[in-house]
Image 1 (tube, each protein chain N blue to C red):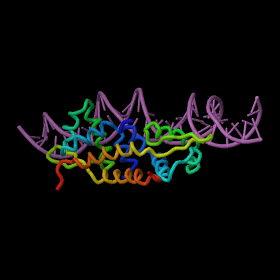
Image 2 (image 1 turned 30 degrees about the horizontal axis):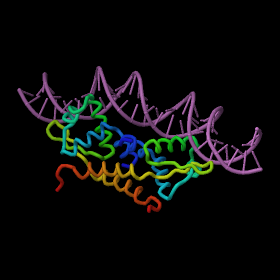
Image 3 (image 1 turned 90 degrees about the vertical axis):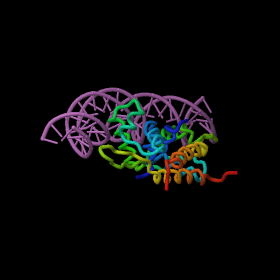
Image 4 (image 1 turned 180 degrees about the vertical axis):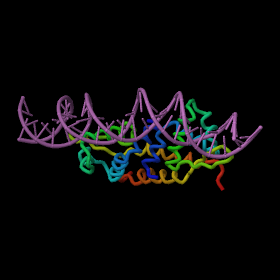
Length: 92
Length: 92
DNA sequence: TCTGTATTTAGATGAACTTCTAAATAGAAA
DNA sequence: TTTCTATTTAGAAGTTCATCTAAATACAGA
């Protein structure tokens, strides 16, 4: 919660790529790991940052944990940026 | 240039507040510093991060340096988030 | 229950970030 | 030119970050 956490989460290229992957639907931690040249522990860390920022949420099925996009926080970030942009002094 | 730089710049609360201040129009480095309980050197550093990320640009007048919002990079960030949000699998 | 697979947690390391003080630079004004 | 003001640069200290290896946990299946 908070824009700091949102933008910090989005500032990392691995995390942005994870989110982009999740556009196509939910994926397990293992399926996500398989797409990167990084250890499972590292991906788990990134997923935890994204989860903390509420940019993704998880659902458990069998012994897999599936992750999916949470768009509501994206909406908030969108509004913050739009407000900053829209309200800029006086454009010609 | 690059979303990493944009979001990293936006992840810091001081920098977000600087940008919000600049919504009201251009301000000199000194005027910006005066609004924070931080040294001029620290604000100068944050302005340099914002400038590098192309979120602000400067214009020099007399011996002042004025900063103002650069909305084009905000537009890019907006599109990236909107795309992530909009394209999310199949909503009902 | 035992074994195997999926994922996270713990702890370490090196890099990057935020802030400070002190010094340097640039330009205005006298 | 000398001095003053505005701002940046340099360097240091403490914090947070990204990544790894190794160990722990959770649960499924035999």
